Length: 152
Figure 1 (tube, rainbow, N blue to C red):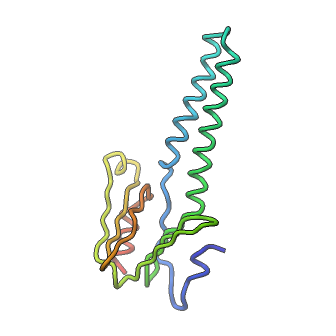
Figure 2 (figure 1 turned 120 degrees about the horizontal axis):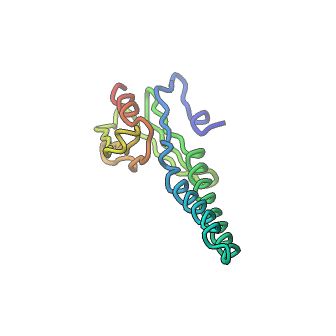
C-alpha cells in the first residue's frame, strides 16, 4: 500500500503522478562503463591483469551501489497531484513528506536545461503562500506535471 493510498481523503481523486526520469541513473551507468573499460585494460596489460581486475571489480561494485541507491530513491519517492493538493513523499523507514493545498499554490516554475528539454526531464519548484516545496529534481515530463497543478 502506497503512502498516498493511506492519506487519500474522501472525494479526493488523483489528477497526475510524477516520476523521476531515467537520467538519475546516468552517474551509475558512467561508473559502470568505467569499470568495463578498466576490465578491458587487462588485454593491454596482461602482466598486471589481477590488479586491474581487482580495481575493475571495486569500481563495478561502486557503480552497482550508485545504481541501487537511485533505484531505491525512485522506488520510495511519490509525487502526486490530486484535485485538492500536491503531495511529495520520499523515504522508506524514515519518511519526508510535503503537502500543499491547491488554494495555497501561488506559482509553479519549471527549469529545464537544453539536455533536459531534449530528454524530457527538469526541475519543478512549487511556491505557495508563506512557504514552498523543496525543488523536485530530475522529474520526467515536468511540463505535464506543472500543467496538472495549474489546471487545478
